[in-house]
Length: 320
Image (cartoon, rainbow, N blue to C red; front, side, top):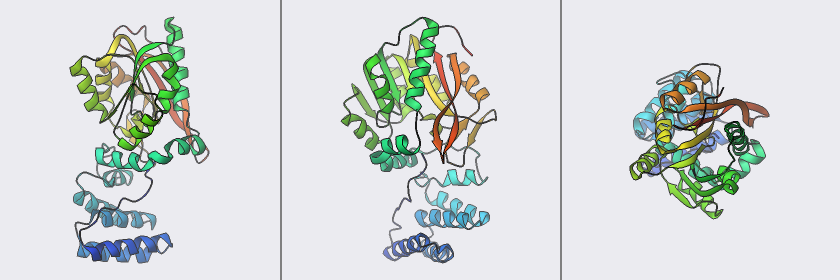
């Protein structure tokens, strides 16, 4: 999933806001040069207007003016320290600033809140999303190798979204818990009445609270959320600490041919296989299965992905 539309945060000045909206209308009609001129006038009057700076960066990018785009996105970033607009990601995409900066909570929350109403339909109808089914198959394969049935007393669904993964595993689970940063996504999951407990919160913070409370889970899932996380190490360390002794964790990622973390043109992260093996081992987890899988398609092209299952302290022998 990529950003679904521009974010408008008022400059606090009515005239500047009107200029911005007029520029957006010009861009919508294809007159990008005129839109850029009007936005340049707008930010000269309102230099702290992050939304206008971001729009100016996007238009310069559309016009092939990389230097102009970088300058505008840098100004947007300075005016928007919480990165609601995602300027840091755009700078990374353009090869300026950090290569794979963390996505801010405000950016992710806004992104998913505005996408929630059409999330299920978009994934199934346009992206042919297979994440939950692929995870279910991978978990069944790993358990079969361990001589265990697919039955869990407790499952933690990280970044549960609207509950697509929860629905795939609910028949095999006694207690299902989900956490997601987006309140709108959680509301959609709540309406499906699949979960025994749903929490609006950041995943790492939630794991820290569960660790402090002594909670344990037999299965932890992360279906398609790690594409929005640059460094997986802190989360996997937290997951290892909430896994029951024979518990397992299963997750999907997008991948690339390199060894580390890459920000893709889609503004999602891809993780190299060597990096994944390293962070799994560093978390004290045992790799059980690692398989290539097309989790989704984009523009009719399968997206390169991996599906991974790892075990906790007593989770069984290592795999491939």
